[in-house]
Length: 593
Image (cartoon, rainbow, N blue to C red; front, top):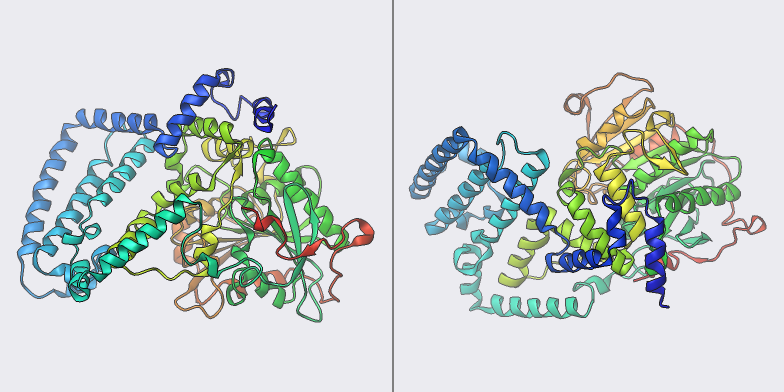
């Protein structure tokens, strides 16, 4: 019997029907699973039933809203008139026009001349009309409204005049200047990308960033390993260190070295240089053998066993734990479970773009409903894990202009290769996720919001974030599509603990990788004392003082205020206690493909 055949019954037995599979009968009907998995392959894991239901909900309620239809007709006439007036105007730009920031897709001055002005104005007017047409209709469910509006934007983006040779003045100008050389180079770029994609090779330029050679190079040692994680302890660079160690828990959907990129923008190196004993988890890239690992396994092997190892290496000290994205969510669950069980192991908890309430998780929720998850679960039963490509497609849709259309315009029409940097290379180094764990966290966290509502079970008993009393440092980013800052902010009414909230410029990744000295960076910061009065996010944004530069020094200062007197650095590992040095950082798990 193959390992694949052995895995499937184990996964079926381990899934909790009440919380993971909406229809337990599907597990007894392999034909249904195969049909759903095949459909997922054809549709890129997007459920056609979800889209059909959303469109039916929208169209049906629009048919019952004559007032809305009259408004749309009036708006269409007004927009049409405005497009022709603007496009035919030859007057100089007014002061109001100069103050208004142009759409970045059409920011080049060439778009304001000839027929191109009409092209872009007509497109923007159409976009505005469809935004109005898909929102504000009485009776349409919130999820269906968001889904129809999102899909309308995606379909319209296909027809943007900037995406085509003869309607893009910037491309036409470049074509005339180079005699078509840009198109020839664009074709070569396209063929090279297709060849790499077919052969499973990473994008062009990633070969210049090799893990352990020029990224993830902060010196350290792997001091603990189980079947799920490696624990890296970093070599101190100061004569003395703060007694309490720092543990960094990255999300399991990413390689840890986003926090240890190049030496100049490595958060881990920065913290080591500030005098901290830093530990970091490196998650295994799961395959078929890890398919039946669940969320409890991630808590026990990824948090509990790691804290045991740190306690052996740095005895009699609490830990300053920091979690990034879903790593922060996992850390919050673990912290609540520790307080429930009478354990006091953490000195503080830091959350980087981590959600604990999933009622408004941003545009990622568009891909999470019962129909979508049924398809994903069926697909994962065929493989035992979620592939990196499946996740990449969803994230690409969330930020389609930056990740898809602008790339096509620059590289295939203008013939200009985007220069690869360390963050882009890291982003291409994706990971998989075990089937059971992925199904559990999508249903329990994203779909059912069990954590914020006190239903999330750890070792068979629910945990409540209200039990947490550990001081919290919470960082959110201003333009985050994955964990919107207002969603991250909701931790304020989930725990009475002291919370220092930071809102920094940037997105989900670039806002965190924001080293001192980087230009055009700022952040806002404000502390709510333990048991303090709730302040709404909008009021918080008005009250919190703004600081120029990186938020990293502010976090270091916050930790210093909660740390003891400097001491001699601890040894690397604790072989006498069963935690010997296993190998040099970055370890072996991060290199798995």
